Image 1 (tube, rainbow, N blue to C red):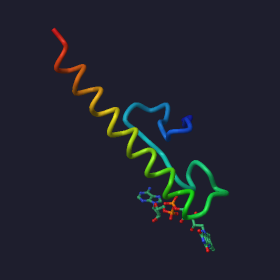
Image 2: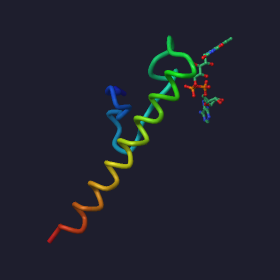
Image 3: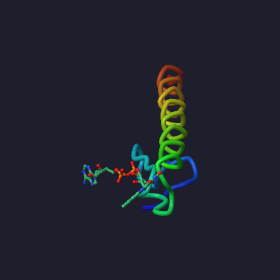
Image 4: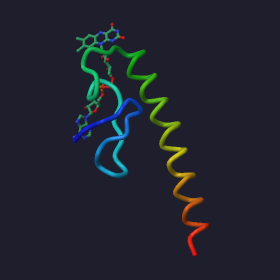
Length: 56
Ligand SMILES: Cc1cc2nc3c(=O)[nH]c(=O)nc-3n(C[C@H](O)[C@H](O)[C@H](O)COP(=O)(O)OP(=O)(O)OC[C@H]3O[C@@H](n4cnc5c(N)ncnc54)[C@H](O)[C@@H]3O)c2cc1C
């Protein structure tokens, strides 16, 4: 499994943040990554909802 800078993994619907992606990080790094991933998950869900509504 790979993970990008936003926490999106190569497995659809699975996100990762914190020490699992960066073992050198401390609490503040893990919290920051988790917060960024949460925003990206929200954007992803909105995009999926819009695509669903616009589907013929
Ligand atoms: C000894 C030590 C001292 C540290 N001191 C500091 C410090 O002073 N300041 C600082 O900022 N950072 C410190 N750190 C680092 C800090 O603890 C981590 O950066 C931080 O906890 C990472 O948060 P996380 O949410 O990524 O992972 P974690 O806090 O490790 O959380 C992961 C959670 O997932 C759970 N889990 C694992 N596998 C599964 C599974 N299969 N199913 C369900 N749950 C699962 C685990 O039980 C755990 O609760 C220290 C680390 C260690 C080891």
